[in-house]
Image 1 (cartoon, rainbow, N blue to C red):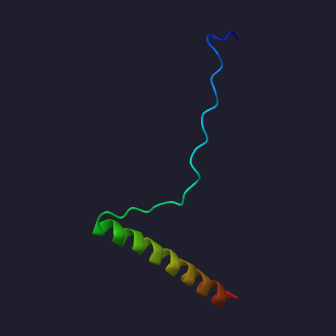
Image 2 (image 1 turned 90 degrees about the horizontal axis):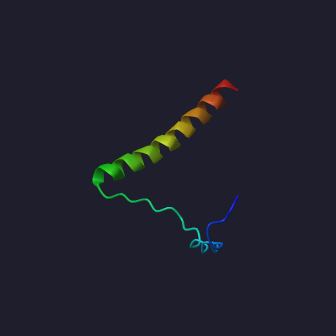
Image 3 (image 1 turned 120 degrees about the vertical axis):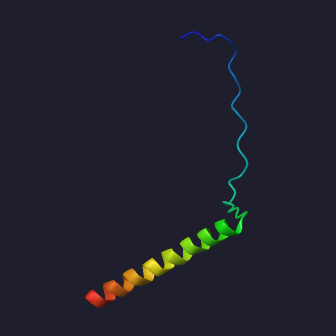
Length: 55
């Protein structure tokens, strides 16, 4: 393989990793987001109750 130009310097390191940012612009998105959170919590509770009942 033949280089066609001088070696390129390494790209600068990215900014430090930042936490994810949830952007809830509309009321519908807020309802969907919180509904999903509540649904996940309810699913865990129901599955734990089923597991307790069968054991």
